[in-house]
Image (cartoon, rainbow, N blue to C red):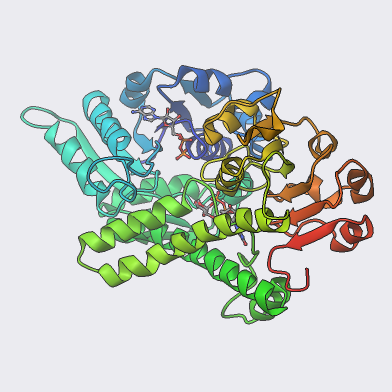
Length: 467
Ligand code: UDX
Ligand code: ADP
């Protein structure tokens, strides 16, 4: 079976870029990305490619080549499903906030709604592909819903595959165009071959791995759990370095040259953010308890606990270094996104650190090259303030259009995202705008320590025992 028409449900950070690359690499396949969110679809259709709803380096060029040729964005969900031979499900699966499994289990309401829409609208034989990260055995739920819709005279048939996405935000296009591997899980070899044929347009055959459904679903959770665990491990060592006089970068270089450990994902920082790591580990924790494995659950839960601790630790040490109080003090926050090269703030470490400082009565001035003020307001659960009473004790925040504006009159600068721009700041000039004694808290270790010290600023760097 050769696929001619693909429909992807969900035009988010995963669905949009993934389908844009598939359309770009397979010009003979018609790809339609659908979403219920009209504003999001309108943004994907915006003639001005700098206004796409997702910021990813290189995405504008890929969309520019394929859109209008074999890539389209629409809200006509059922029509696109009816037309398609293959339907990707790429909708959000956040952690449940209430009810059974609240705080850990994934909320599958959107996935289930998709499965029901596919069950209603599909025609002929349809291959349904799980793209969203899902709890192990979700494919069974989807199959169940699809099969229940095909009783009696119904000639329609379905096959379900798992094809998890390993792209990282900020490098999504590179990760999609040159993936380490593509994983396809399923029990129907014809459908697996059909999906493999799509990827074979640009991915070497030996990098297309085939497994059963459950291994594929679990591999995604496991990959994210292992990556997050490395970050918690190095952040725990960063705290140890600060206490003992060692430098975490030297330790990371020393252990990273061991070929069994490897050099990647050893950057200490303010803790991991993003939509996947915490959610996927908590999901693993929930499933482990469900399968009667409490020790396994506790083991993985500690990775998240260490991450949360690291964020509170940074907020706490800012307060301690600023003479035990930040009430009424102006603090410049550089970076709000969860990592550089994305406008995404989901689970960003900046959120928890800013909230802790607001709670202490600080006046934050936040700069980020890509995150908009309305997003910051939603994340901080507080509107920005233009006029502030410094002695009220109530924390407030405002957006700054430039780093220079952010540091004006500030007692401290916190670097929370590793944007390239923050690596080359003129600390001499910035120091002149700050109130003394002034501090730099470099949670990403991106600024040049010698320059900061030469500018007369006090410095704390993550994992630097000599700082
Ligand atoms: C991650 C996985 O990498 C990807 O394979 C999966 O599909 C989705 O989840 P993403 O969350 O987009 O991707 O970004 P990633 O680069 O993994 O970074 C996650 C968080 O870890 C960020 O907050 C980042 O700043 C932090 N991080 C990463 C570190 O603190 N140190 C590191 O060495 C690497
Ligand atoms: P991800 O990072 O996994 O891509 P996002 O939240 O960025 O997650 O995107 C998921 C998208 O899926 C959202 O734009 C949302 O509107 C869309 N969506 C959720 N449920 C449905 C549905 N039943 N039909 C169509 N689109 C949906």
